[in-house]
Amino acid sequence: MALTEEQQQTRRRAIPEIMVSTPYLASLGISFESYEPDEVVIRLPFREELTNDGTFYHGGVIAAVVDTAGAAAAWSNHDFDKGTRASTVAMSIQYVGACKRCDLIAHAITIRRAKELTFTHITATDDNGVVVAHGIQTYRIVD
Image 1: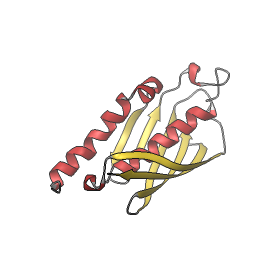
Image 2: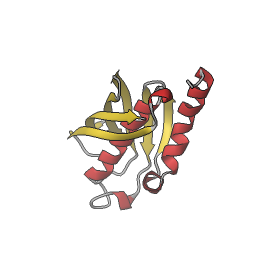
Image 3: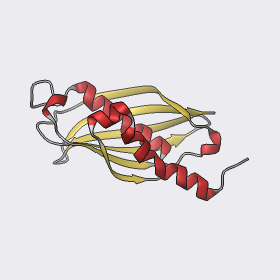
Image 4: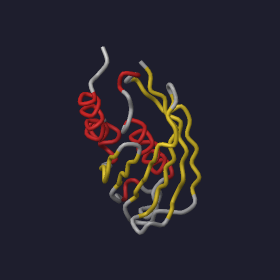
């Protein structure tokens, strides 16, 4: 039986709370700045334990934030009648700068939705808007 539009919206609105409560993401401490259909902004507050040297974020931390932002954008306007099991199928990141002792912000937009795959583009910046990384993600949601 198909979900009503109200049920779809309720499920979509629950995603930010669900994501930040998962063990790994909760340990990172990310928060959602905005969560709109096909467009998401998340923030990772600076913590020294997430860096290589007390100053610059570890690349894996940046990748996790980019991946999370892309996944959130995929869920933000998802049709839950098409499934609820999901994973990142592919992700490419180009590191173009460094995030030095400041919050990391990731802005993700949905580029295209197909039958099972959603394609997102993510830009990660420091809190002054300087680009740190670009990501392209393919996210799969199925029954």
